[in-house]
Amino acid sequence: MGTESRKKDHVELVLRKDAQYAKTTRFERMDFMHNALPEIDLKDVDLSTTFLGKKISYPILITGMTGGYPAAKNINKELAKAAEKHGLAFGVGSQRAMIEKPKLKETYEVRSVAPNIPLLANIGAFQLKKYPFEQIESLVSSIEADGLAIHLNALQEVVQPEGDTDFSGVLDAIRKTCDRLSVPVVVKETGAGMNQSVAVKLKEAGASYIDVAGAGGTSWSKVEYFRSGPVPGFENWGIPTADCIVMCRNVLPIIASGGIRNGIDGVKAIALGADLCGAAYPFIKAWKDDALDEFIGVFKNQMKICAYLTGSKNHEQLKKAKLFFH
Ligand SMILES: Cc1cc2nc3c(=O)[nH]c(=O)nc-3n(C[C@H](O)[C@H](O)[C@H](O)COP(=O)(O)O)c2cc1C
Image (cartoon, rainbow, N blue to C red; front, top):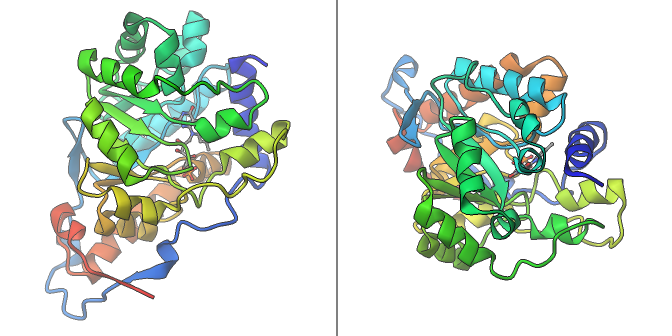
């Protein structure tokens, strides 16, 4: 099956079927230490921060999902437009399809509707071994991105009938890309999570951020089982997102995604050690339901209220908000 129709399948399956992990992110194990004396005014809470050299109003990234088939053009544009309106960061999905068919570039182009936000290009780590560096650099420049997200998806590839399963030499390919690329690199998982030793290797390779993309949200092995399902048993494989953050914190700046479904989980991720929170599925689901603007509004409000109730006036203070575990 070609890259174009696979990307279309992925979006449709995620929206139509239950492709979410049965196991949780483990954010439910923790609560914020409520501060009965916050001593701040809610209207003074400001969670803005910078990402890839640009200011965002809230520490939220809509992580890469789509592109590479005709209907994806509108999805990327709508998501990017909402990100611009709310001051969030945005990533396009894997640009492998436009390497294979350059005219598909237009399905990833969102700068006309999102001129000010941090924008991430996207390619699989496996593809770095296959294509010349100049082609990778052009993925970034052709959509005027501020950074490149390189995704790690060994779990998805191994359960996909047509998957690429030779991940040898991937770290070296990431290192060479980080050395030469004109913009910062974010290395991301896709839902199975990262541990500390992976984070350390990625730091040594020159990554600027990791997106831990842990277990508890969209399960890529489930998505692949819906498509064909050759080797069952890996539906719940992966490290829960909260555990990934604890393992990887203090190595590289962290984006925490994987199962974050509301602003309260997003803020827990930040208090645990992430710089930004991110999500994929809830944004595309809200877009499908024609409720994207409302969903983002509630998400931001939840983050703001959590900051208020922990006495955190800004992003820096929020990172130090106290959690207790149960
Ligand atoms: C429909 C869909 C398509 C995705 N495609 C990509 C992709 O092309 N590149 C990538 O790096 N991650 C991709 N992802 C993974 C997400 O960016 C994210 O890491 C993962 O889904 C976990 O987040 P979630 O639980 O909020 O969905 C995709 C996710 C979804 C839901």
